[in-house]
Amino acid sequence: MADTDIQSGCIGGSSLVASLASEEVEFLLSPRAKVPLQSLHGKKICLFFSANWCRPCKSFTPLLLQLFDTLRKKRQELEIIFISFDHDEQEFNDYYKCMPWLAVPFNSNLHRKLSEKYHVDRIPSLIPLNPDGVSVEDDSIDLVEDYGAEAYPFTALRREQLKAIDHAKRRGAKIEELLAHDEQSYVVSRDGRKVPISQLVGKTIGLYFGAYWCPPCRAFTGQLTEAYNELIGTTKRDSLEIILVSTDRDLKEFEVNMSSMPWLAIPYEDRIRQDLGRIFNVKGIPALIFIGPEGKTVSTNGKEMISLYGAKSFPFTESRIAEIEETLKREGEKLPQQVKDMKHEHVLKLDMAKAYVCDECKKQGKYWAFSCEVCDYDLHPTCVQDQQEL
Image 1 (cartoon, rainbow, N blue to C red):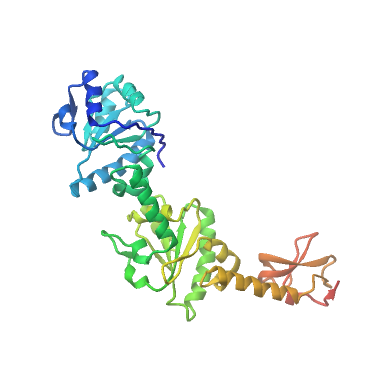
Image 2: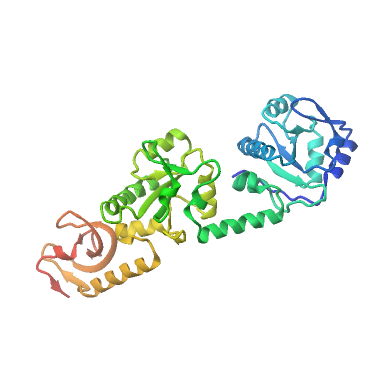
């Protein structure tokens, strides 16, 4: 996320022209020619405060380029004006080469005055100015990062509309509404096969947010794969699909990540990956969101479900988890609270464990165990020998 903190007042294009003229700025630059200040009157304007030396600025600029191109194709009238914080004119020229919009001619003093006028104390900053003086009150950088061209026209009203759309999708939306858009309507398998999103309708969908660079994700991928394969090998095979929502750092890493997964993925180049993270408020990875066959979100805590109960969790609803926990409770009530085993010197107490290895049979165990509080010793309830209930 770019480093931003913008406060903008209700200032229109005419005020900007007057400010520039007062500093003896006679024209603006464009990639093709000089542009008179008067051409700004009556136009929707965004001031882009940025610099070539600023890493967050250079990360944000491609997003702004994409937005600008999209709006131009839609014939939306928007003028972006670059105001440089570069150290010298050569840095300014090198940076401006990649920009298709207007720029204030380089002036090391002017950017300070304009940043004071528009209350800019960090870059990048994107301040929208309307001819009628309407302006968003908050930082518009995060609005563009989150929503791209959908953020236009960058008003407080538009921000609230977009948040309401996200909220509605989070509560429940058809899978096509979540995953498909005008440019793309498929997910991919690890062998590159394109699977139409229409084929996922009516299934329970797990959105798996993860990345190969993240060790906890790689560990959880193994747990999820075990549960997935168990379910796919049953009558539930046509009722479930997992879709990777990658946060890998590049395409190569994404492909390595996918090579270990038996499920599908959002294409790496598809912006919907970022949208899904925002819609479901994903703050850390790994994360697993389950969406039911009707399109309603049934769980935002799928990782814990899989970690605790594996394939037993299907269909990953709260009622199913309550059912599992009630069954386990009844099982525990039938077992003694503590026992003495002939092969161990200490008393063993009944305990609930997410996972353990039985010291008798050396096999993996889950849920109920008889454990030693003095040393690292665990037994399956069925492996206790010459049990003496205490």
